[in-house]
Structures are given as structure tokens and as C-alpha cells.
Length: 187
Image 1 (cartoon, rainbow, N blue to C red):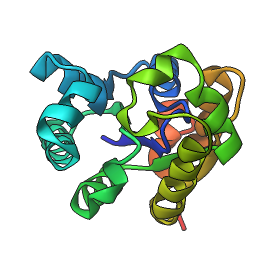
Image 2: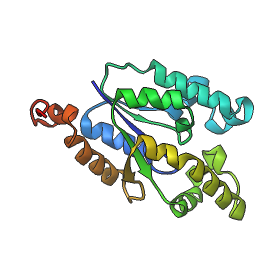
Image 3: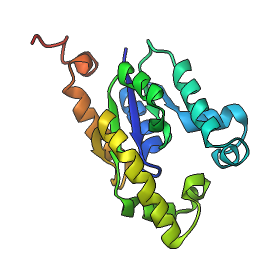
Image 4: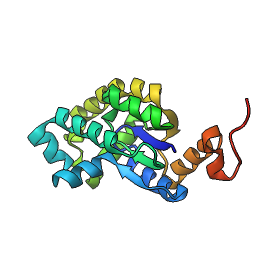
């Protein structure tokens, strides 16, 4: 029973694509950020401010470790979850990982929307924020690239990203049965 995990930078569409993909597959959806917020009764911004980013990353790892390894599910992760190698190794063992890739300009544009204000690492304006986006993307993109199959994240609607992911899943032997394509192919 596989997991399908979504990684990518902040504002790449992981949560909305994850919900859409889970509906398309008929599987449950877990969002690490949402689970942490629900458990602590605090916003991500408040957790970062009061407990720090390291504690948030520890909580992400704990959530991933608690997910049932034998259950089909779609997992949307926080943009910085990839910074914990152990957490990424768990995802890699559990099933395919898809990287919703976006450009710095996409992130900048999306960071200007009202809902983006909830992201503590996207606080700020102008050149300072552009530089922070550039630095964080440069730090994280090699990790996204190492673990994830790239999926363009600049779509107008999460259904488009979900459709691209479904196309990739259909080509994977361990997913043939989910699409009525029979058992694994002999090699």
C-alpha cells in the first residue's frame, strides 16, 4: 500500500493539489501543516514565533512517523520538510514523491496574496522578500530534485497538477492495479 507524497516550495500548491489528488484516487489526504496546527491549536506563524522552526520540523517528522505505513494516502508536506533527511527517507520508502516545482516569480506573485501572510518565512516585502525566496529556493531545490519527480506547480488549477501526477502513477508498476491495468508487468 503506497503513499503519494507532495513536496515543493511554499506556495507551490501542495495542499490544494493533494486534496484534489486524494479525491481523484479516493484516498485520504494528510497535510503535515494542517495536522500540526490542529494538534497544537496554534497557527504555523505562532508555532514558529513561540517554539521555533526546529521544533516545527521535529513535529513534521513526528506526524510522518505516526502515519500508517500500510495505508494508501496522499501526503502534502510543508515546504521545509525536505530539510530533515530522515523524514525524506521515510517518504522515499513509502511510495512515489512528486515535486511541485515553481519559479521564484510564481512564489513572489503568490506571496502577495492574502492567504500567503500565514507563512512565517514569506513575511516581508520588496527586495528583502525576493532575496529570501531566492536563498531558500537555492537551498531546497537540490533536495526537491533528489527525491521528487518534477511536476510543474504553476498551473491555474490543482486539477491540472493532479492530472499530471495521475499520468505518472499510471506508468508505475505498483500502481497498475489501482488503474485497472492488472498486476505488475514482468521485466
